[in-house]
Image (cartoon, rainbow, N blue to C red; front, side):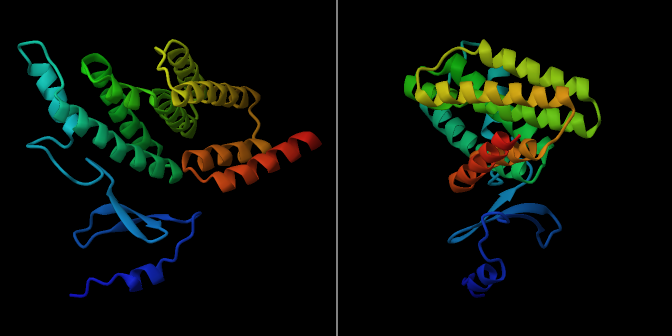
Amino acid sequence: MSQDISSILEEWKYNEDKNVRIIYTSSGKAVMQVREIMGISQYELDGRPDGKKFDSFDSYLDLVLDREKNSSIDFNLSREDLRALENESRLYYHRYLLCFQLNDFGRVVRDTEHNIEICRLIDLYSEDNEVRVNVLQYRPFLVKMNAISRAMISLQKNIKILARQILESAIGTLRSMPEVNTSVFILEKSRSISYLESAIKQLDTGKSSVVDTLVIELERAVVMENYEKAAQLRDRIRELSNKQ
């Protein structure tokens, strides 16, 4: 069997706007594929993105939570635990960004909650300050992505009042969040609060203008780190806002 994937890459040419798809394996299971510049990555949609298990647990987080629950002595996280949890959070981060791109908000909620729980464990039990800071500085972004996705699910069900409550609660969580002394945390906290406040204003007006649509697209571009597209969208938003 040839290991050359040139024909697959040729069939699915790289396009940064259409680089994620759902395919079905030979066993009928749905998986997510990402076309990158030099190849293709594949993610499990459920469980760990890489499909790895730990004993009978679907993730390393589940293994640690079971230990925490059943610990009869002072619970702590070893260096191995911290390294494994930090690495696992990166896997879930990449998957929930891709799910957000596909409007799969249910899975975004699930994966952000997974990483929020990792933050809780590291905040409580990590004695390694470097790991603690590296993980917790992204907490504001997690809270924002979780809230926006839950609000979108509520709007899809036409429960507007619940969507507003979700966004307001997330803003309160962000404002009371313990500070992490990094530029990433400061920027993400400020941006997240501003974005959620703008989302509430849009809910209250009940209107979706061209500018509103472009703002949503801008957020997607920033989330996916497509900064060239984000710059183009900012210029377009500024131009339309000046005209209005």
